[in-house]
Image (cartoon, rainbow, N blue to C red):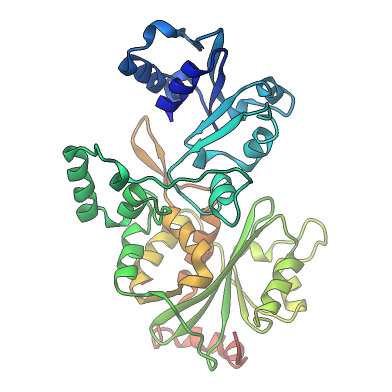
Length: 392
């Protein structure tokens, strides 16, 4: 991309290009040094004027470097006359940035270039260009190490080392697959082992056993719900749903549409909090809607890490229905620790897009009781267990 930008600038006097990232705190984080290296390697330094913040191109053109988060709907209009906008690390572009940028680069013959390594299928650039039909006149190229005729031996050895030592990361880093786990994710080893043992795949519902839903409640962020059955010493995870900014009725209707109107709803401690609008507890709302409800009490300080350890301990007995739970699995693979980089110490789980699914999954594991170990627990669930579900 950098080399092509230099080539286009040489062939088109007056060329104007902008190199974009979602967040660019300094020019060190931009593509400027890479473009400078290409100008030097092509031996065309006399045609360009490399300045501190911009690169002047032949015919009084320019290449600039900007972060999309710094733009508003008004300021982005300054890019209207540009010939090329190259979005580097485009997997980080927000939907807001993409929405601002697409109609702005509209000069006759202008182009938008995106380069990225796939992370999630819901990333806006991925959804735009690889899901369904891309925009008219788009050209989408998947390029891997195997397409590089000059691929050096030293990189090939690194690739082989990753294939051997980091199989959970290999497909994403080297083969262009979506990231299944984030580096340092809490459940990276557990997910890899589950895949090796074929515990992530097709999982069928048992029509005679109770269906349970496990919730993480969001007010200003996401609500996540896992659907599972406890069958003997196995936890069978059957389905996953998530929404943001939706009223409780949305989830009630969604569960009903999936045949889960009689499922036991297991809520975190804030399920006993009153709704700020209706002054009715979430658990009471669900009871009124016909659900049997259990609320897990507050586990106090350190609850998040206790959930992590419980999930890790129980993962060998967990089976996950991959097709219905893909988004939830992606979240589990991305759930990681927040770190103080200066002191290199952990600060507990990162609260981001992945944490909602992970918290609900942790609640499921906290609620699980191994058969025979707690008769009082079994008795407490006796009434709920009698509800039967024949289709899912």
